[in-house]
Length: 426
Image 1 (cartoon, rainbow, N blue to C red):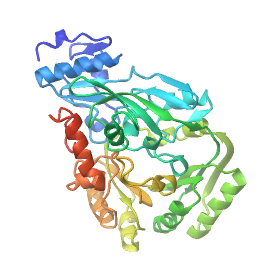
Image 2 (tube, rainbow, N blue to C red):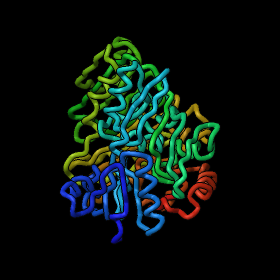
Image 3 (tube, rainbow, N blue to C red):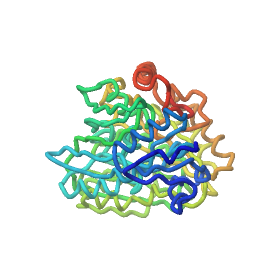
Image 4 (spheres, rainbow, N blue to C red):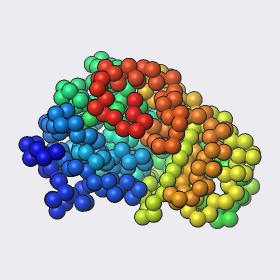
């Protein structure tokens, strides 16, 4: 690739000789920070994205877009050219509609929306990119009331592999728009901006309940029967390590929230340390949970699955027998508005699930794969596209379910030469 110098960008092109290259090339996940791209293109315009894709067509260089850089499977980097979209981070709000650049991170998005009294149902990680989150679905503390982040997507601008710029919504390029709502990022083109129907920012009740010496099995058994069927206005997720934490948000006042939580504690049969704070603006509540999604320095792996039915007691016992040494189980409640959208209405196929389980452990710990195999037997054999798993053998149906054939048709229509290709891409 000796002719990189012919690339003319509004932004910067960082090659290994550039003093900022070593910092710019690294995604968030420590497991994927050793990859050395040919270059990092810090794109400042749609024209920059188009120019890099044209160079890739001419030379065969691989490209990958990077919004936040959090992909578990390492898709935020490449040995080709990284399209760093961080500078495309504007947020403009008018009449409840937000146009957001694909490089915007969640902390910036929430702050900008809060200034207009609006928000989106989305995640808690401050540095998570809005584009990647949305394109793979988008699960968060408002989701049981307002659905996925992708359910609020009203339009997008996409640079296609052939250089065309496609503005898509329900009326223009409707198949592409459908596919962008939950199939996973990087499949059909490079999204440079997104349009959302926002929701009013609520005042909420924040809660954290902690058990220091828990019966993990009792907590899981009670949680999986209670949380998915609780009122839509409460999202209560469960994180198990050596301690156990039930945390989340309720669009209810503090007394009503405490009453619901007490019902759960009664079912568990053990009293936790309790922190319940009512009357909290939602942007502040989100910020208070940011550390839950901040990666640590240790290299870890995770695997996950959706569940339409409760785990069997024997599976719970196997999963909770040895939660030591950095091993964790994270349970996320689904149900509510997530499941009121037909599975074929958007690319996100997982509309009948009760909860999602994510297992996390140090990268070399064999427990992770053994425990995941035990859990997967009880699961729906479906996996969240935003939690990609390189070890899946049934990945196409696991990510896309019955939407797979339509997604393949959209892929063929918009990227027939598979310029946007990576392991487990369509």
